[in-house]
Image (cartoon, rainbow, N blue to C red):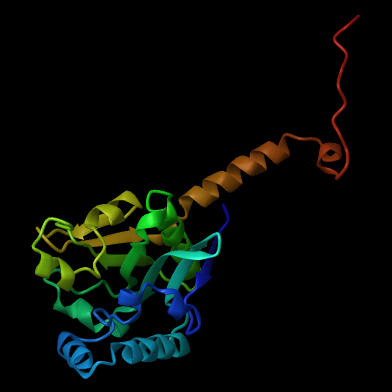
Length: 222
């Protein structure tokens, strides 16, 4: 099974699930989003948002593919590009953070660690761009509310997901807590692995690091 993660672009935008491809919950304020849906063109608004954000700020999403099939995605951007974020009781997002808008794993690929893979990919991208942290609004009652309410807030990822991949609650709320991940923490696993490899390689003689050289086997007989 092969996995790969690519940036969201106008081309890969078409690989989002249909409902997400045409959803502008985060990209527009509530009034504008309702107007776009009434006009029947939310997909065009989504495309316009991705185009503008890519042009002005840069990469704003990741898509994970498993054996060539789109299996999961995540969207993120500075708070100024996410009008809906101001509508939550635990807003605003901290000025030093990028907002992780939504994360979704296709049901057929759930349980395979794709969510964590995507968050790590986002963390690496944002660290290179000088961002200090990621924040998100989670749904603390995901799956427990009425059908109509669930449909309205289906673009929020479960708060438990964010907690499971390393976020911490910075502003509690019974329904919409705001959570935060410090990027230096998110990438600490990479430093630990690199340090372990350096220790391992440092304990080996230079001859063993040369391609094609096999270690000699000492005889235990006298």
